[in-house]
Length: 316
Image (cartoon, rainbow, N blue to C red; front, side, top):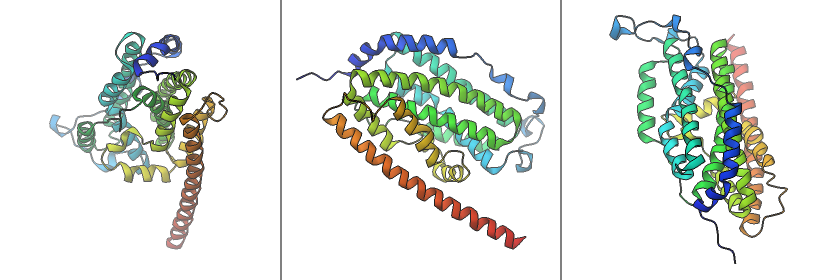
């Protein structure tokens, strides 16, 4: 009977892979400056400095674009919580500590540039934005459980980084404003490189401890929530964004979950046994159920769109 590897053991075994992946990341990552994506000439003082405070008519963004930008920014704002959680899971030693520091520094640019853009262009109410930031960061973010801490953490951030990339790109398109779209594409490119690092570490973990890693992946996929779920009005805003295709169940299933599982060759693996095989069966069942839920959502959205169009035609 073999003894299960501890998180410390797994980290030690995966350290050579992490070193290689960090070097690869540093070669591919592009340096960029948040201030280069903010139209500073559009800025003006608020009332506290003799100007005028925000009014809804000052925003050039639609309601959907405003909601998406705020949701994405508040998610990025919670970086201190994410840093704490990931540093606890990965450790602060050696290559793991180097990666966590680099990842945190890169992620911090996202909130900086988004907030500067929104405030300078008066795209959203800065007072309500600050109130929401305070509430969200006070609540913070914490993983729901501490079992298989490293394996679950790295599986979660793989999915989360990819989901965030999709949300940022779609938000940029919804803004219908070239600079906002370019800014969010730049952020999305960072998220994609982060996803590649985490996805590759997860793949190495699957090769090292396939049964334990598959159980962790199944737990994460079946319980997945976006990291911004604790922010004010998240459920209501998420429904609005799903309705308008910023991030919906179809994207989650077909653009995030299924491609990642294919990259890990979850359903082709021949090195699983016992609980690993049971976890894979559970994952298959869940994906089937999620496909059914996705189709129902799409049908409901289509019916709602048709009804709305009919009401508009009757009113016109």
